[in-house]
Image 1 (cartoon, rainbow, N blue to C red):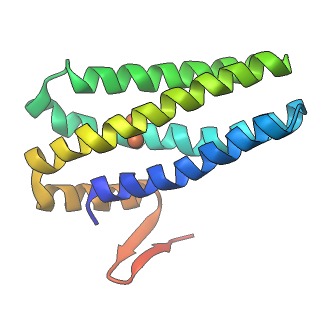
Image 2: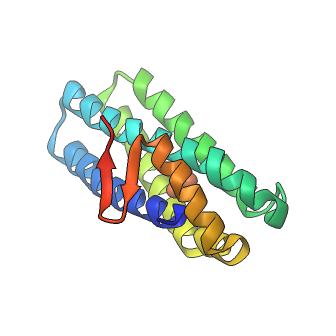
Length: 155
Ligand SMILES: [Fe+2]
Ligand SMILES: [Fe+2]
């Protein structure tokens, strides 16, 4: 599987988790409930951004340079992590919901940019063979083996 397809699949799961977090902050004023929902999103979102920064961005750098889209994507990852840090330290429910609203807007727009611009550039500049090899590295990073029949957890 190509790395870009794996990342698109992770986005699809994360979009569902964003909807879940959105519903939680609309339905609940309970700090513990909201914190629990954020921590699920945080775990997958942070590891997703790390995989992009470790596997994809360095390979695109020779084609795109350090500025331009990669600088924007890295800066947005930083802002997402900053909002997650702030959310972890926020004890006021209304302020926490506001931080989560900002996080969801930013993360959704970021994913749309990656899907509409960055992943297409990756497919154009790197090609299918390199992206498939990078997909194997993604499988190792996620501790799964990608077989002809699909993904299989190794633990
Ligand atoms: Fe990203
Ligand atoms: Fe992404």
